[in-house]
Image (cartoon, rainbow, N blue to C red; front, top):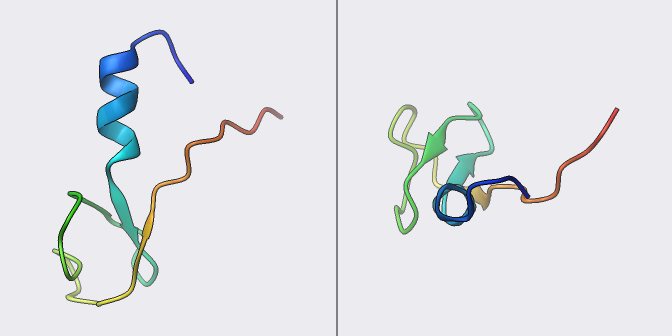
Length: 49
């Protein structure tokens, strides 16, 4: 993904709220901002324009 493999590994562990698009730590049950239960893993592919 990038030049820094340690940082990339940490970013891949994040989850994103489907409602408010907030990044959350891995392993949480609900969003820290809006308490929404449905979270998705962060996308790891880079899309070039």
